Image 1: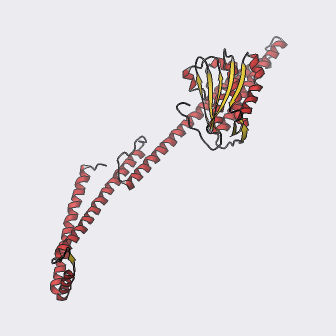
Image 2: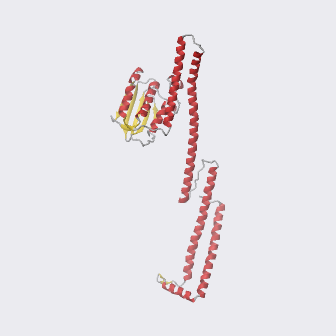
Image 3: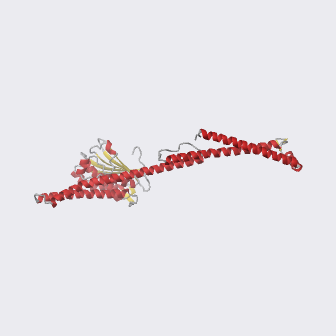
Length: 381
């Protein structure tokens, strides 16, 4: 840390004053001792006997004054160093306080950058860490507020659309504005479909909020993950065949045992398979491949349908995001399925991401074998 010119001159002045005071004190002590020795022959004789008994390097110490003056000089140097270092530390603390006042005025991006001795450096590091933590908490709070507002806006929009249709068709029925019983059935059926769409949205929203809440506990049990994937694939065979698709499941090794909430993980893969069936245009197969790698299970849910645009890959897991708005509404998608899947995977300590090219679109999931372990995404996934 650099001192200001004023602080440097102040430090020099204090050093000079301290030296002058110490010299005057030393002189006073020496004068007093000389007076005592000259006025008391007994003490002078005792000092003479002591110095005759002290031998250093084969020589007698004939001048006690020189030894005493040397001791005083050492003491003076210690006092001078203590005074100056104390003053220097005081200036350092003043600089730290000034930096804290600057940060407290709203400059939260500012950090204390100067280097100090070990003790004060710990204070500086603690202050910087505290500011970082406070800034991160404020940013998280702002993000949570924006996220809440966005959630309310999206939910309001997605509920208002089918609700408007429901009210419109029920209004036609209420006002008897239909020509035949066939029209009445048609209007009732459309209102029913829109109400079902609203129900699906509300259920997905509740599930998403429940999975995002820290108070929601998972029902963890040991699960044969390989068998679970086989059962999921078998349950979708009929629907896949209607769309001229084949669905298969493979596992390496054949029986992968892991700790998980089977019901919640089942929802993840149900969602991914359903998405592949709905949106995997021109696809001929859906594959579920699980592999045990160390202490984690890597699962790929892949299909050879149309490629997902690169710009959309990073947004797939955002709430209410749809790659194609019109197509998703036709299929009744709420835009919350992948967000729910991501939340469930993260609650298990894993992570999920998507890959897509001209040949294959894959959703890749990394899950820990044992709960209590949180996996960190790597550059390679």
